[in-house]
Length: 395
Image (tube, rainbow, N blue to C red; front, side, top):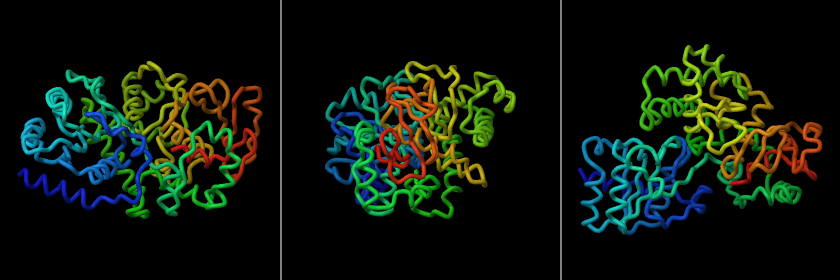
């Protein structure tokens, strides 16, 4: 049985491509003993894990914890056995699918200081939950889907460095000229909004949205119940709620109205919204992100990324919705996004942004310090008016 695990590990290492590497690869400090990479299903966690395995293969093994081997065998005992054979680094995929993951990782961390474990898991995974609190032991990273910059790199095979927000705000005119001299970003922007967020779009664009719908179902049916105790009726209610919201986003929530529509208590709706936010299906815009309880109603509800807007509706999405969803999605990977008093979004409690088309004026943010317009359908910006697509270069 173990021979089979070794064969799978070698096969996965051999097959993984290394010509394109996600933004997070270079952001990760790969030295701690216990690293967790969280992310939505389909975001590319497994590829990232295997790429590091391929570059650092000495005394290492890849194990997927959703393998049936772990239905009747403890990870802890397997790793202890392999330790005796000289293995010191373990790449553990889909840890949330394994019942004893937190206890086993805690024991391995405490008892084998020279072992390194690099794991992947669901976005909703909570490391401080249960008896095996890993919050002091584990370094956690979140992998988001492809940025517009990464999508262009994949499509055009052109490397463009990410731009910091501060740099973008100060020098966006120069950056937009440089990028437009290299390529035509607006020509590709619409395609990205439709199918460029998840790396698997390259496998088959024709059935991409169908596969995306399956991914959402699997997140709700398989990944969330592995992390939270959820009944069949609760999951069904969440799917019903998601469909209703998909017709309304961006939605300023009336929670009681939503509760009445799906025949659930108000607090159950708030909990469902919170879980879908943690699972990267929804994006909840709140006025504050510090110490927020799920019982506090969000200011606005969005789908997590623009690709989802094409999954639930045959009609083209509303342009304003598309723009705001894109901006929120791209900024949240590196920044805190909250609801301001004026404008559409506040970033890092400092910068205010109004999102709109090419004719959008600064009227709504007049007098607001450090405020900007993110304008769609423009190649170049000027002063406080910045092309919307350029915010896809932040990671």
